[in-house]
Image (tube, rainbow, N blue to C red):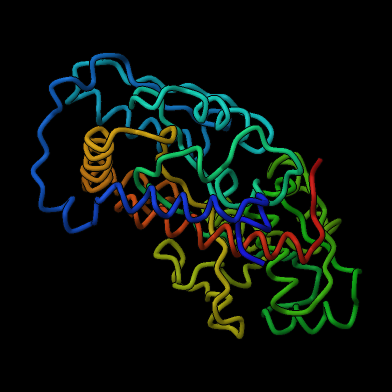
Length: 339
């Protein structure tokens, strides 16, 4: 079933989206070669970056890095506005319905733009068509960790145990529809095992149950789980990226252990309402690339477990379509739905 038909019921929207991206005409090479000069008419007003989660998390960190850098070169304030709730849908809906003038931006997430459209029965906005992709920002790997008392040391042992005990093992996540939940569902699909999902309100609630053995395993952000792994409180079986993480090169990927193509990461992007003028899009894209390419910014983000990798609008658009297709399939096969 085509992506947009499955997730939104409107196949024609896919072609509209692809056509709109083609009209942007901003290839990576063109952006790299074109000199950046401040637009005479933009910005004149304060720029607002909306974060769809509470302060302190990865989206908030990225927003504040951009704001701090931009305020050094722009003549207007750059403010952060946290609008959490409903898996990011509250803040995203606000941005989707804002004027497309470059003054209201969104820290997009894998959940908002590639998972929620297939997960929620009703959406107040279209997670693809109602936004202009500006640039990928950064990603953070997820890692599969298990309770020490489970009695497994390798991925192969975990799969064998799960097949011997269908529906008896459990995996926790920080909530239904999060990338951590989707990591577990993808694991079930690719291995053919049946491990029950136990959703929590957040990571802080799931960790005590993992440490206490009340759940068998957990997909967690690598930056959050690594201290417990290093203290030997939990066992890391593999990261969910295609390549090993520079933060933990000793932890193998799930892909290299017999699950080729397994990839499930938390990633973040910069988005604007649909219809953003091309000249404003171009400036915002280059401002983002320049900020995230600074050595001191890279070092700060890597220390927070985030791997910056800014790029062109087309690259981000392709990622969104590819990820939406993958997670729509996983969600449909798992029979997950939120009304």
